[in-house]
Length: 277
Ligand code: AMP
Ligand code: ZN
Ligand code: FE
Ligand code: FE
Image 1 (cartoon, helix red, strand yellow):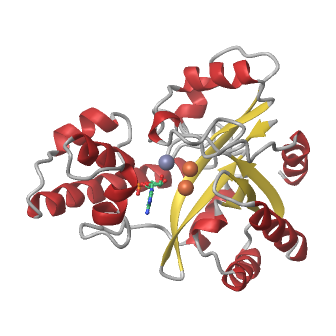
Image 2 (tube, helix red, strand yellow):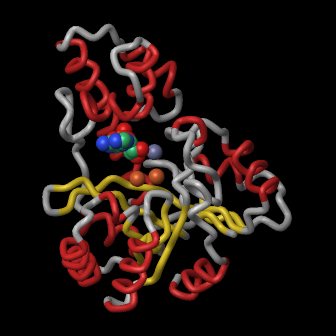
């Protein structure tokens, strides 16, 4: 069992990189990619710990824009000293997240919600994101669940939605490749549930230079996995997979095994990916 999509307290997960590593070892995860949003810090801290037997992969998850949709990309194997430009570019993405967070606080305050940037930062610590806002809205009883915080306020159809200044998918794919990494389309099931739409996207993204598609993910049903696997082979893309573990921030998702044991990703997925790197 491997897991190539996880988050730590360096972004919006609730386990520290070291705790994540310990959990991975305890449950027998053979290979683990730490893919925090907009930062390598989670992976890099985990990499300082001696952990014989566990294959740790350097990853990152980036929010990009494609055909006016927000699309998440995973990048793997970008080295510690990426060619000049990639780290600065990622720092710019963090700045755009901070600017969005400021606007989001103002938008929520304008709706009469009692929330301050200081509270968000205190809660989100390293890299505050919308899940941290959602927890605060829940704690303050403005909503009855995390999902409702997104539906009513924070998500694309929420009243306080603030689009982020995201790079285009094309730019992100090109920068990842230039930095020696591989790009994978994260949780394609979230883009659309229409197989025709996904096929069109995957076909076009392959032409742009996308390397892989995340066929296995906690939110994918068996029929989704079959579709993404078939599309990957049709358009010559590799396959990746992971739980998108966030700890208590997404309590239904278990490391390695996903939602209700819907994942058991074979090590060969990573081995094939490595052949392309
Ligand atoms: P951010 O990176 O701060 O824009 O937050 C993005 C994160 O918020 C995603 O990785 C998801 O975990 C979560 N998220 C975004 N939209 C939704 C939604 N509609 N419902 C639930 N969670 C969402
Ligand atoms: Zn997240
Ligand atoms: Fe994502
Ligand atoms: Fe994720």
